[in-house]
Image 1 (cartoon, rainbow, N blue to C red):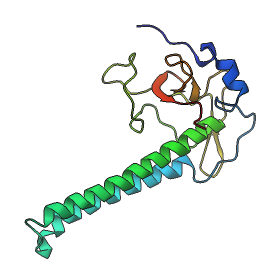
Image 2 (image 1 turned 90 degrees about the horizontal axis):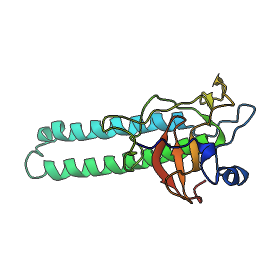
Image 3 (image 1 turned 180 degrees about the vertical axis):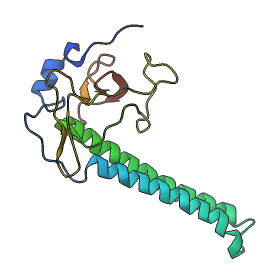
Length: 189
């Protein structure tokens, strides 16, 4: 297994920094944009809970309204489909807001492992049970109202989009610890 380079060792890093295509490294806490990724994550949780609750209600209350039988199943699948559309929209919105935060040099949402919101193939260097490991030490960690939770370590490369070591001409998500195998064109903010 080949060890992948740090972001600074990837060809095109200096040009990407000059072009503003890497995460910002502000000296002072940036202003949190609204809605924050934390607020979007809470909205995602609420949409998920509402979708599950609506589906359960359809199953349990349908028979009480004499809908058991041929009418219950189509209603259930319709409720599930609508729930999925709202869930997917909330997930995409969370991901967009969160990536914008990373590129601005801060985050309002942290976790140790996770990759459920990115649809991509698994990074070849991770095992089948491994999630993506994250390190937030290169970013400002802020609350949704802008209070500082932790200041960045200037020596650490913050999570965000950098020139990819695997796909020249594209950017790849760096988690602060490893490359995520999630790619973006240079046109992505």
